Structure formats: C-alpha cells, structure tokens
Image (cartoon, rainbow, N blue to C red; front, side, top):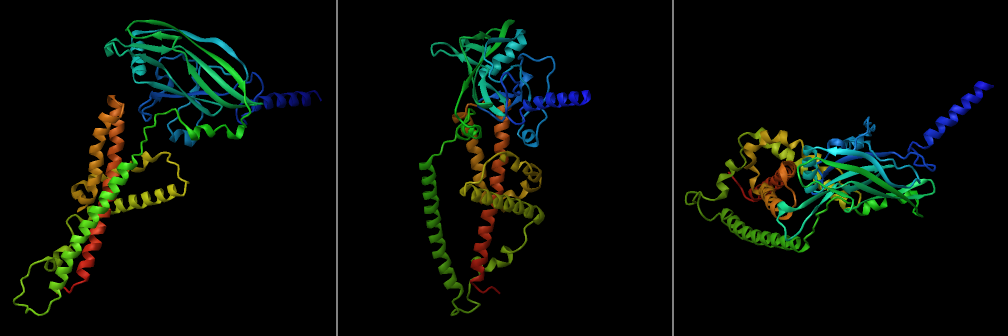
Amino acid sequence: MGGLVVLVGLLLFYGSKVEADGSNHKYQERDHVPLYANKVGPFHNPSETYRYYDLPFCTPDHVTEKKEALGEVLNGDRLVDAPYELNFREDKQSKTICRKTLSKEEVAKLRDAVSKDYYFQMYYDDLPFWGFLGKVDKDDKLDPTDYKYLLFKHIHFDILYNDDRVIEINVQTDPNLAVDITEDKEVDVDFSYSVIWKSTEIPFENRMEKYSKASSLPQHLEIHWFSIINSCVTVLLLTGFLATILMRVLKNDFIKYSHDEESAEDQEETGWKYIHGDVFRFPDHKSLFSAVLGSGTQLLALAIFIFTLALVGVFYPYNRGALFTALVVIYALTSGIAGSVLCGGSTGIFIFLYCFYYYHARSDMSGFMQTSFFFGYMACVCYGFFLMLGTVGFRASLLFVRHIYRSIKCE
C-alpha cells in the first residue's frame, strides 16, 4: 500500500512538471515558461545572422541548446537558453542578470554591432520577439566620427496573458539606461531586466495573428504601379510595331515565293527561303544547348505554377532562396552557349546590373557579409531569369521560323 502511495505521488509530481513544460502552453502562477535566444544580426540584412552568444552578453554557466524540429533547422534557428527568467505572472523590477567587465575588444565588437543596427531575436512560449542592442546618438551638427554609441543594458518585458496562457510579449529598451561604448576602453556593465504581466481578453487561438499582419524586420517592398503600367504599355506598343513590320515583310515574301510566272533560271536565289537547310541544322554543342533549354523550361514551368498558386491565395514564400542553388552546377556547362538564348535572357543581365544601382542608391547595406549575401543571391536569381527568358525567346523564335517555312514550298 505504501509503495502504491509513493507511485501515485511520483506520477502526480512528474505530471505537474509535464504540465508546465510548455508542451500544452498552460501554466500556473510562477511556473517556468520556456525562453530561448535565437540569433543576432544587422537590421538591414536579415539574411546575415549569428548565434546569440557570439556577442559578449551575460552567458549562463552551461548553455543548453534546444532540440529543434526540421523546420527550425531549415529556417536557420539555433535556439539556446536565454539569461532571463520570465516566470508566469511574476513581475520583476530591475533584476540584475550579471555584472560584466567588457574588454576593449568586446567594446569594439559591440560598437560595430550597434553601428549596423543589430537586433536580437528570442522565443517565449513559441512567440517570437525582437529588440535592438543599442543606438547611435547622432547629431546633424557633429561629424560622424563624433557620434556617440550607446549599448542598452536594461530590457523591459511587457507580457499579456489570458487565464493560464501566454498571449503576447513585447520588449522595450530605455535609452536612459544605456552605457557609452564610443571609446576603446574597458567598461563595467550591469545587465538587468524587468517584467510586467497584464491581463487580456485575446483568445489563445488568435495570439499569432499579429505576426501575419506586421513584422519588425525591414520591409522595403515598394510597388511602383506607374512604372509597371508604363513598362507593360511600352512592351505592347513595341511588340505591335514589330509584329506589323514583320507581317508586311513576310506578306511580300510569301507573294514573291509563290509567284510562278518567272522561270526558275531567272529567279535570283536570295532571301530567307533559300537558307532552310541551315536554319534547321543542329547547333554546335547540342548537349549543352539542351541542358540550357531544359533548365530554363523547368524553371519557367515552376514559376508559372508558383504564380498560379499566388493568384488563388495559397502561396506563402518561405525559403525561395534555395530554389536556385542548383544553378551554380549548371553554370559551368551552359555558360559557353548562353548567347543560342542571349536575346531573351538579356533581361536577366539587365536585372543584375540594376542591382548595383539599388545597392548603392536605395539600400542601407554595407560590409563584406551583406554585400556578398546580396550579390550572391541576386546572381542566382538573375541567372534563373536568364535561363527562363532565354528559353522563352528561343521557343518563340523556333515557332516563328517553323511557321514561316511551313507556309512556303522549299525544294
């Protein structure tokens, strides 16, 4: 009987531990709620990220990494225990995490991060949130070399709850509670935080809605409708003019080639009719040429399929950058004959050249990592456009040539 009581007691104990482990998102007052630090990186280039503890923050004695699902790994998440304790419905005021003496090298590293608007990302009960590491105190009257660099040493958490569940978390930093890291010298810093819990009527099922409406990450998506309409009209007009000229020329050629009044001896062998033997001859390096057309056709079919899904509202662009990674392998095989498609694919070259203008005139990116990320990804994307549009140009030309030679009799 005593053993049964002990067994029941153990089951109740471990059952209560499971109840507060975050698996069902239900907690009791002062229960531990899982908080993980994910990554840090420059605000203007979300693709460039580093581990949270790559910067000299307060580090636990034993850094524990979270076992991640496949989606988290593919997303580049590397979750580790954060140094803050945000127990359920437990308010805290100016709780010190650690007192740290930053060396000259660490101060320089943090100053560089602040100058690039580094942000941090964490997850609290599976809710993502972001915050900045510091700020640059700029003055228009001062030279940029005289700017003051401030590191935030205090973080305030506002957490909303509904009954026994976490609904929302927001983080705030106070510029008045910051340390000056402008100079290369050792700095003593007391890192601290505070927590305020507030009740809300938002149901647990709707707590993720705000992330679908807005994001703290930079969004420079500008749709220039006038430019788009102007480009479409220009393309249609030029296409119409070219088609009109070609139809008139071809009509005259058809009449000339079908005229039987002249004898064969008096006909002058000129014009596109008499090169039919060369037009349909296989080009050199036909295997490589087939690889270009095959790759371009696959990408074109995929692009059409994706845009079709986007029109019906079921497409969400999660990791499109991986789509073109295989193109680098094809590049060495197809670069030699990329001209058999240059007419149509030249649009991809134009897009890549425009990237240089966008990088210098419109973006806030700088440094080796951001530059290499931007131009590396854009090179892959533009090469994909080159293959797709080159395939379109070749197939359109092939259909046109077959049509005009089918309309005449070639001996």
